[in-house]
Amino acid sequence: MDKPLDVVIIGGSLSGLMSGVVLKRLGHNVRILNRDPSSSLQGQGAGISALQNVQEFLKSYDITKKPHSVLSSQIQFLNKQGAVTKTAEVSMHMTSWNVLYYRLRANFDGLLSEYCPELPKEAPSGEGKAIYSPGRNVTDVKYADGIVTVYFDNSDGGSGSLHAELVLAADGAGSHIRRILKPDLKRTYAGYVGWRGTAHESAISEETRKAFGGKISYFQYTIPGANGTLEPGQRLLNYVWYCNVPEHSPAFAALMTDSDGHRHRITLPMGKMRPEIWSAQKDFATQILPPPFAELVHKTTSPFVQAITDVASPRAAFFDGKLLLVGDSLTAFRPHIAASTGQAALHAQLLDKVMRGEMDVRGWETEVLRFSRLRRLQSMLWGNAMQFGYVSGAWSWVWYAREMAVQWVGRWWYG
Image (tube, rainbow, N blue to C red):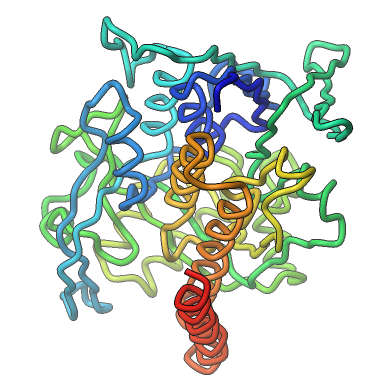
């Protein structure tokens, strides 16, 4: 495109930042509106997978060019006694939300942090303007005469609006913008939660460190430590432990009620878990988990819980292609397949092609929906089989296989 666009991105987490970096690099003027009033975000300390799409994105757009992940070359499974029962040769880069967030902020608006204390002296040429605006809670979007108007409330009082030639909704799995555009679309609970946490590598016994051996041990992996350090002994051991909890049960209500008595719907944040709930979960870990995993749970100081949910929009482009749903705002996958960050990277990479004239918005939507449908069904297949048994997983497999066949035929027929 010859003329730089004025772009508004709603949501300042990883997906919004990835697309923002791409658009800025291409010379467009980008403003990110983020609801949180803090000038920079703090994640839950969670680990994430930096798979192929993420690696390709960072290779193309990250000007810091610094190491960002821990490479594991093998996945292993342990039995109740802690012995290895199965291994698979799979190379995976594991990182953390904080590492990627501050890396992307450095690339987007030049934010310096302990994760990225400096930037190259020579910035890429031809870049557009990039503004990160915290404390902007977007309330509505309207479309008229080829322009999208974004309305927002300010955290310090008052309200405002912005006109944009392109708007990206990157406001996450609970997307307010998606609810405006598709009010009948519901986010549903999958019937289980993920207990998440980290423990410092130095706090773990030598026996457990040897059992994990730097490999991905379902459901544990090593991620960068404080300020993104990759130094052995200073990294973090991250885990996701899935437990079935019926939605309307007293157990679910108790679990999602924090130490202040507030009931959470999706995420019980760090520092808010009631002591008696955490004590009971540690006892449960001792009873059923292999000793290395049980120790990791016991050494966790700030656990948090996420209710696993499903939501997927049947459309990605609205307002004549001037408003796009990106990242989890389009589709939220279950964590089993580690695809959410990769989806955000894919959306940004395909947007690059749209801006360069190599693809139109309709083609962009087709590709992101193909990825969305297949990965969503894959995540449901894995989750249902692991949590509810092979009968439940069998039905998920039928839908997954059907979608694979449909996409294969579609690509063969239409290209």
